[in-house]
Amino acid sequence: MSFEIRPDQLDTCIEFYELLGFRRVTAPEKLAHYVVWLERDGDQFHLLQLPETSHMNAGHAAVPLGDDYEATQTRLREAGHDVDDHEEYWGSPRSFARDPAGNLVELMKFPPPPQL
Image 1: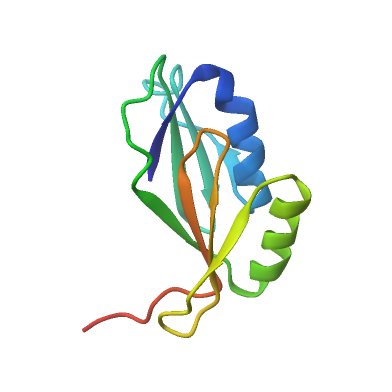
Image 2: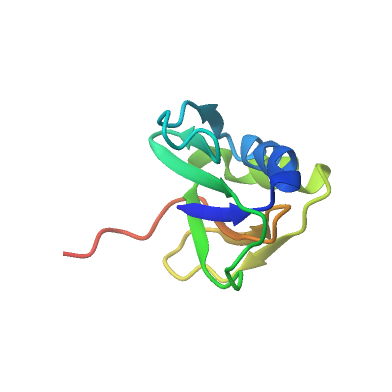
């Protein structure tokens, strides 16, 4: 997932995703001057540093957290982020939070089962 952010939002966005268990990894050299890559268990967020954002903040990323779900919610709330619980459509606890740039992130204990 890629999100557009202003350069002045970079540090607070990195801190937000670190609370979700992501860590900064090396972006390809040709992109590194404007993109920061964060990774957790093979999943990635790419933060595109742009002077002005062009999105409507309608889309969202989904992050399965497993046994760390409740602890992650607690870390986010203790750091001052709003975390809104939502209906369990497939039996998994779910909630939503926005990162400091306003991007919507769905937190879930486990993802929906595969559809064949």
